[in-house]
Image 1 (spheres, rainbow, N blue to C red):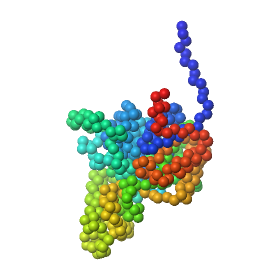
Image 2: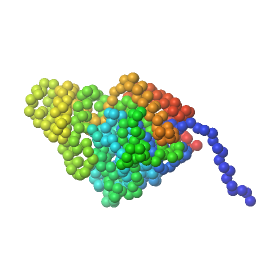
Image 3: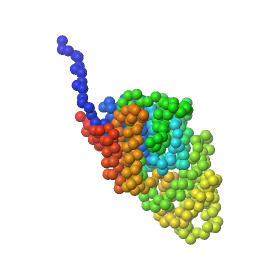
Length: 467
């Protein structure tokens, strides 16, 4: 009888650290799945250290949560098809059981979610039949408040199409099928138990008790720690000094994710607006009092948000009707009334300064700038940070020190199982001017810290997976 014993696999020699480079950040999910299949990382219990100007913690308003367990390729398609898909790729990995901890390391000028150590759950939850209160651009809050959140790159990418390759027939068929099911229970989509405004404004909040198959998530938010500062990932929430959470025990149980817009960031919604004009509008949007604290009453929060949006839009529309405010005197009663309506939503100790800066910007703005700011809405708050070559060098040096410390015995004690890098140039979030410098700089840091790299580009995955 022929032997049915399978010969053991031949041991392979040491490989370089897997480094995946993609253009759109949602493609990082496919890269992570590839790394798991290749056993560079375990399937579950992973920690992700996520350096980015945007949290990418939104979720699709249309993709059924169960898709995560049925077909990864359907998830990839849903993300690429959604205008906000570049900001919706992390929570599916949490719901799928891969990520147990996500640490968003933000630059100083990205304020979408308040710094903190949050223990939340991510699960499936049905949305209201009308789709909830979010706009057509679901997951559109990739901006920042002086603490919590706003709409964002979690935003609709300007000019984004709903289908990457254009499939009107297929989409029409899907729409027809959906209309036939209008009387059925709405599908459960991915939601989170956090009451931070970032999530509530996108219609993503759902208490754990109402979630299907909730998965625990430790969500950390902080800036890059200083050389002397504590590493938040190693600190236990609610514990005293010196008490730490257990480290990741095995090599490969964490992954490093870097978006190049962490180092230099553009706002594609304000491509024709001067930064000094946009800044006061962003400050007013970010300064709204209701966005500076966790949401206790969702309905009241949304009502206040809508009232603020109306007052803010009235200021822009009023200035546009007057053809700009270059000649508007300081005592213009109409403008004072409009600004006063906005001021009711601002903290008392900041109100005068914020409104004064806004008045100056209104008086200096071109008509085309006012129009673009009006069209951008609260996307005006998306991080926008112009850099110099010297600042790029400083930020790369800080990144190198951080990675070296994170992998040392004083940190996680191991190198990551894989690294994902998102360029984010085509969608307008990383300025093209800095692409080559930043990609080369990040790879040099990784090589200095880890030696040989096994670099793989996301457009090579199809060929690899059919071999």
